[in-house]
Length: 448
Image (cartoon, rainbow, N blue to C red; front, top):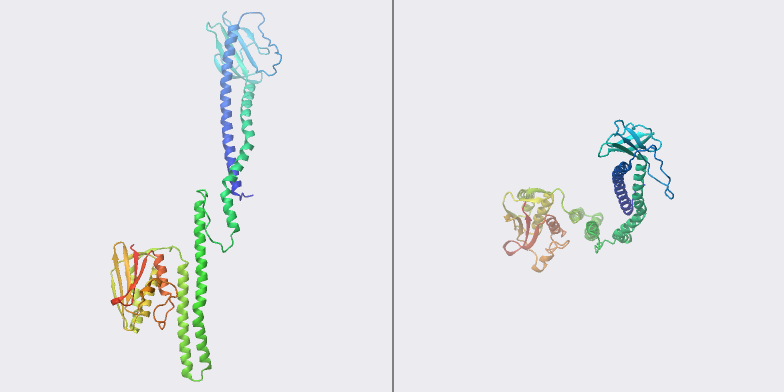
């Protein structure tokens, strides 16, 4: 079963790491014990051989019987033979019980060797005294050596094995204490209602959890803004559509009851005009809702703002001609910015549409695009009635209309302009338009 608990994962991984290190340590300890015991056995054989050579003497009884010592149960099996070469022909002087009375096969004449004697493996050492008269070999049972090695290694592992449960318990306590901030955060999130989107407190949160908390707080903020935008959109749409829908219903009722054809056509014309206004309102509301829910624009590209303005001016020629409005442009070529060209096109069209809607009949609109250091400056100004100085700060607020109410509009154009500018890092400034009249809107984009 998959370990879904972070605490369980940490505990299992920690214990696995401890066991792996312990196993490696035990293995190297065992190898070290083998090496140390080998050196001890070799040194013991040398010392044994030296003692036996020192005690060597001729006699008729050349077989040594080892007496049993009271109170000592275990003993290391050691065998030996002493040969006398002083009379020309080697003669066996001393030997351990049970050995053949000749030099064992496989035992080197000098130094160390391993040999099979009596069906068992022995570690042997052979040497000659300083006069070259006596030669001795001694052997120790390798089974005893291996048993000693295993005992040493087992004693080392026992202490480690006995301490492992204590280590596991300590790991559980330490990991539980270390994960307490995670449990507090989980409890905070579990107790929250869907409407509660306030940020999580960082406090004494460990550094490893702070990026997660900051990311979640950022997510809470985006969700809160999205919900606010949706609630605002629903409220604004219900509020703004109520009046035109009522007017549309009234006009349709008038057309239904009208007796004269002229009266009926007039009511239908007014209803169509109201429907167009609602269509424009819905389009602006949807555009604003999308913009307010947008974050950093993906797929940002570098594009020529001057070309975009030229296209927008060409698209508004008919509207300007219908109002006898003179549009002049001073566009510096190849002024590039980075962003979303579709959104910037919406911004330019809204600026021109706002100037045309609220400008006077036969008035002027001036569009300029210039460079100013690391910025690209776009300005659209008209000579219409303008906005009072005390109301200038409220420009760009949704559904705020300061021009004569007879002018068709919904009060969302400059809100869309402000939001698109914000998404592109542009500064927006509202001021007086042409000849001390009208409205001038200036935007400063970072140059690409």
